[in-house]
Image 1 (cartoon, rainbow, N blue to C red):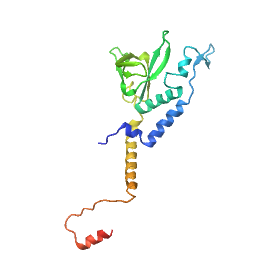
Image 2: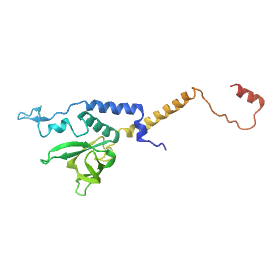
Image 3: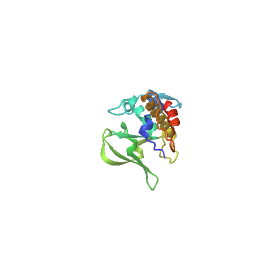
Image 4: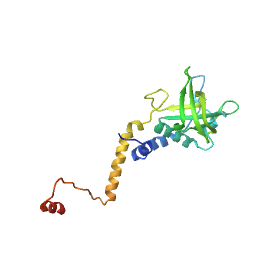
Length: 203
């Protein structure tokens, strides 16, 4: 009967350090556009249609912050959803990471996958609910333990340990705030003799 809060688990220093360290390190990695030549050799190229969005994914995030938020969503929620906007040519011109708590995966009777998305002003989605096909969403799944389209966060495995660590820290803080003095009430059934009272009073 222990209630685990995601917000409190994230405030545990070990969990915080792990997810921020992983996200910040991955965010430093460069993104390269590769092309395979006739000899099946991959090499980096620049393309006026695709390279701009890789350098600047959207109007409010740098490449580093975009990747950092991508990894954080995946580690915290188990899923990262990226909405793609396209220009008149149908080429992707911006990428927006959506709030994972406001995205729901839908599966049609024929097996097609859709995503129901809540309003997101930064991504230009003003309606309260929008359903988009899988072709317009990049869905990066952490570990699909229970469903192939639903990722599970590592917090699922470390939540109890983090809650225990926070409880230990809280108890320790209360002890030191009390001047490192232990206090309590001694309950003894039945009457007490003067001798017993004197003995407890001395200690």
